[in-house]
Image 1: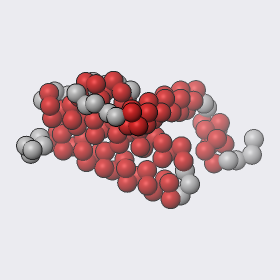
Image 2: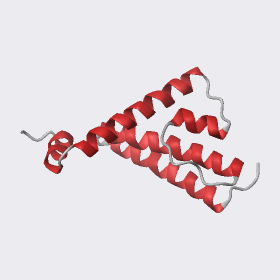
Image 3: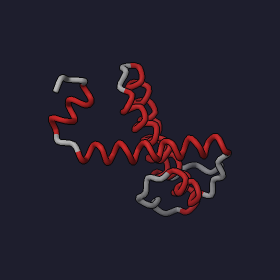
Length: 114
């Protein structure tokens, strides 16, 4: 296997960091962030593959199935299911997060009384 370019290595390093962050969030019980970080780790690793294979910057999309197709990956049924679920949860979290005011986000994440 050829040595990854600096760009590819950066994607891989970011994916590894996101996975380590997911573990830290899991250990502290911050489960929404676990899902977010796991989705980001998978996304960035697939984007590393796209960058390695094409030599170009990956597309700015977050759907893991679409990214896997562009990377030429063929996930098995279990992997595809995980990719779909992570993509769906990522999209739902993003919409919910952006639509909340700051005080609502704090209550939601910290479990503070309304």
